[in-house]
Amino acid sequence: MSEQDRRSEQSLTDWSMVLDAGSIDSPSRSASLDRLVRRYWPSLFACVRAGGCSAEEANDIVQGFVADVILERNLPAHADRDRGRFRGLLFRSIGNYVRDHHRRNRSLKRRPEQGKVASLDVEGCPTPSDQSADDPEQAFTRHWVATILRRAIETVRTSFIDRDREVEWEILEARLVLPMIEGVPPVPYSNLVERFELRDVPQAASFLVNGKRALGQAILAEIGETVDSPDQVDAEARDLLRLLTENAR
Image (cartoon, rainbow, N blue to C red; front, side, top):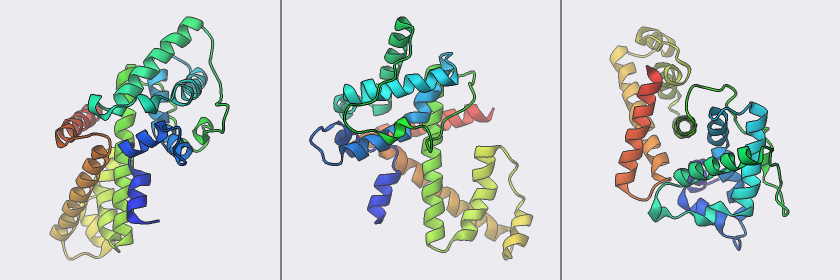
């Protein structure tokens, strides 16, 4: 797989994929739809759970939403990059769908007539298991942030390992990544110097600076795939940092 193909596969939701998913004549539409659903499933599930549904009911609702709205009504075809973020359209649509579900007071589970999107099978698609105190919009956005971070981290990890920079990656992981995603204390610099037989603490700190810079660039690149202008990247980055700060309190 080329580097360009890898970036396309790893990006959260680039507009070319959204447009391809909405094009009924595209030969790659099925693959684009599958990628789109897999990437947003955790956010959709968290959003529905935050509205008070059980895990089983939320799973049924998201499956119905995928079949009825994303596939049957072809939601990606209604996405307009000039009218804002695709995730905004997705959030509004799932909200309307949940309200319709509650009015009908029954679960809607339908599969598309033609083919099958693999993401309708939950296996292999990460799903948040606990219901938090977030409201639906907060839950949806937090899981979008988590997806951005996870993909950026994987991009940096792969890049560093491919370029024989494993030590820099492991220092970044020990000092920043694991504390950020698991809440564990950062590994002391002295331990890292001893573990990797480095010259001194400043060398370890320099490696960490390199890793932070690479991770920051990867995060901005992921955000850039979802918006249409540098100004929107800045706004999304500010939102992401705000959510991370709130989560750390």
